[in-house]
Image 1 (cartoon, rainbow, N blue to C red):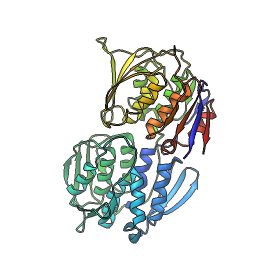
Image 2 (cartoon, rainbow, N blue to C red):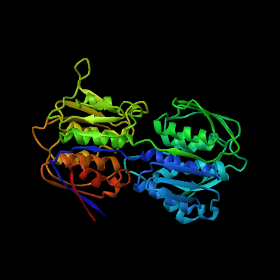
Image 3 (cartoon, one colour):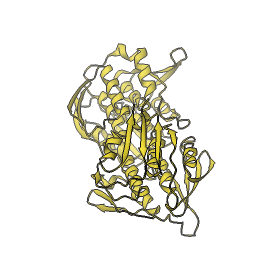
Image 4 (cartoon, rainbow, N blue to C red):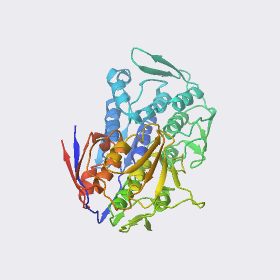
Length: 436
């Protein structure tokens, strides 16, 4: 298992460009199964989760051509039905959370799919009810096989369009239902649909393939089913979580940094959330410029009460950035309440930050109060283990600002979501060694 050895206290300088969006990649890669024609996707990040999904598609019989380091062509002309019933297929699905979005496309195309419960980050319970109920609403049925620890979905008579009100605005749940509904008979209406930019990108790609999806960008999607979809070309957005992570790195290390080609209009509330933390952010065309700041002051609410930063469905703040914001707050001037509403175990990594000298009160599994040091006291070196992608990058940010040399184990978790992160950060002034 690899580790990062991080020498803290070094300022960053120059510019860095975010990779393609991981969460969008996982959605649109699953969508290539909906057509027998070629789908070309550009700006694909070279990260563990995405590479695992590409390898899984290849094992399923999809022809994959790597045109350039970030551009691939996928042709799902023939799918290996025997492989879909194999133990290897179930094991691969079990190791990759994003593989849950294979259910919709395979059910729409084949009328049957056997699927093992997916793995992923250990951040608390992550239920699949929205995915399963969506398939049931479209006329499918499923059975659980306790011997295989897998679910088998059936749609022998095809899928039928239906009105549905989702119990939660799940991004992957909405994506799964959309991909199943585009080839269902009749009209499907999804209310309380997720409307994140990456879900919008999926819908736009499907429309170019011949789907008929309206309401894109809202929480009410209407999908008129079609018989066939055809090939297309698609380019991923930059990863907004990387953008937010780089903002946090620049702020906590007192660095001057330019983040290039961020697709600013798709960042939503992210820049303003960091501004409320007192971080200066300048938009320069489609770039973000972070000037060097010795201090950043957390705002209070208008009535003088402590600032509360919480995650929420889009256009609210993505939960994937709360860990970064929490670490950045440890060196701010002032205090903030971080409220992680969606995952009950995502704040448990703060004990490592407390060991580093951070002033954090963990109120319960969902809330933590951070009292900033205002850079008057550096965090101390520490040895840590990354429990998930976002906690891992938060630990890396903390180590980059700490006094001394820290060690982060189990960094394959970070590799799942951040492409060659130590190489890219070292190129702009960080001191990070990967130890295999």
